[in-house]
Amino acid sequence: MEFRKKVEIRWSDLDPNFHLRHSAYYDFGAYCRVTFLFENGVTAEVMNKHAIGPVLFREECFFKREIIFGDEITVALKLRNISKDFRKFSMQHEIYKNENELAAILILDGAWMSTKDRKIVAPPEIITSTLEHMEKTEDFKMI
Image: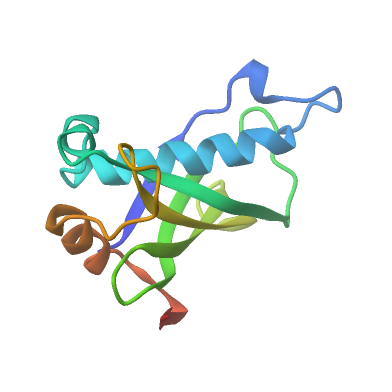
């Protein structure tokens, strides 16, 4: 399923050059991911109940076009790869400005961690089914 989220640029998202500061791209990606999970039933309550939460290992952004105050921003979320047991994953965010101009690509690697044992674990069915239905990148791989 395709997932896109519109985000608004705030004055505090800008740097001294009056364009989007680098860390705002990461904030937009996090907002998109969490919104996707919540809108698909993987809420804070569900994660608390299962004593599980996401953890990030790496996050990287490729900047393509400048974003300035007043641009309309949409973030598209896709799954790049996932382990067979769903413990580890990689996601891609495509950040567009003004409808269809690709401004940045944000890629992250993460996993699901037991909040009790502090170890990487396979997630419960509500998470696996959500990830199974997530839109995939063209080069998606099961790892």
